[in-house]
Length: 469
Image (cartoon, rainbow, N blue to C red):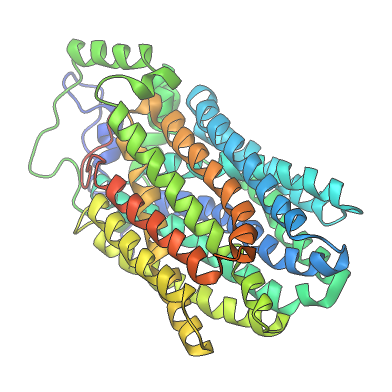
């Protein structure tokens, strides 16, 4: 049953020595305001997944409709990821300068317009340009979304909330699988309608996001304290949906001090791209960038091409798309298990464990010789890989202070997108090589997952801790 009052609200911050706005926010349980924020952000996240997944079905049809070569198919995927790489690096920096909410809305608008125009592409060249524009919006939106939500989430369940946010990805991927199964195989009109369906909600979500509050931590770095105060009060007055251990229980948070202000000023002075490489921050930046790179390489190399690989093995479009739909369903329990483990094992060990599981599953999928083996190993790969994504999005904003959070998360995600450009181009080369094939390809992905797990263990652990301002 939903509580109607928030008894976790601390005394007013008007008195001397009272908690800061961010401390007041961290002392709250999970409220309706939190739920609205996660759901609204999650809808956009699902729409992103819908577009990314849908293209894997569309390129199978376009191969015959437009007589595409394997290289041209690869460029459809890779140009989108080039846009995502640039968008991620740009979006994170813009979010640190102009606000999380503003960049949120703008990126969804760009993404929605590009997706809509893709549906009307008369030739390949126009389609490729639209895929690049869609990528710009998608790439900027995802790291900003995780940064934005984590800055509002109660510390004791912050990792779990980000995994739940990432779980919306599975909803979008499932919807794409359904559209791929029901519409895309019907030729020219089928894929165009499918892409239009994916574009319309994105335009709507852009307007929805204009109504979301700006990040408290961002507002404080810009001296907009009155606006931040109003937002904190809105969350304090919001009914509690369920209670959690809060940052103020059993201890008194220290008041802001001159020393703290000096430290904040020092951090602001070292904000921007250069701040990512300063002493004490560089290790996290390098390790996180490596994890993003290796996970992107394996994930997009495998999942974007699964429908095409199944079709190439002799399964017709309906069957290969149907198998992909079954494999996609395994993402949901993967997210659920990761959401539970991340607040018990911690971010690093949950991420590393799921990456090792992904490595084993990739090798099994690459050597599968029957429909049963394909489905079982594919489901395992889906389970572990998407659970790892949830943990990765949870840990990414936590290893950076507020002044660097958008920039650092965006840089790491953008660097990772470089791998998502390379992987789709590499797949047809490995599959066609005399020494290659599906087994070799997925063994390469398995090695990348293992290296990502080792890199994850180098990251700082912030389970249950307040974000660094």
